[in-house]
Length: 112
Image 1 (cartoon, rainbow, N blue to C red):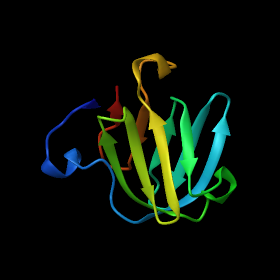
Image 2 (cartoon, helix red, strand yellow):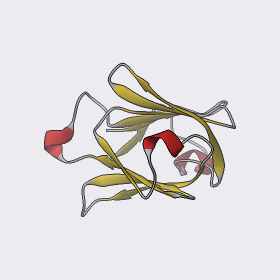
Image 3 (cartoon, one colour):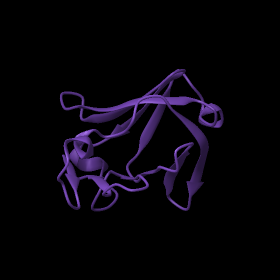
Image 4 (tube, helix red, strand yellow):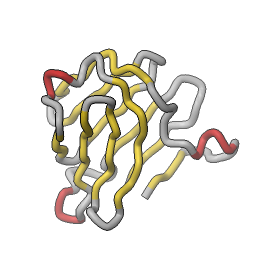
């Protein structure tokens, strides 16, 4: 489910560094954009659900991990105050990818 523009180094295979602060969380037209303190930008195009946290409280949270739960058909963004679950069930797709992650100095990561 994870694809990259130009895989290579082993550190490129890790979806996101652990414990990065969320600087901002915005709804941009029809998708969610999460801006992190290290300059990374995570764009979520598929439907998502906040668990244990409200959308308004995402700003200031710490993003601990991004992992796939293939049995539940979700991508889980593990936060220090809850989680965000991105629906990747076949009927949930809104476009060609569920999410993208752009990190300064790294290849763009695409969940498709």
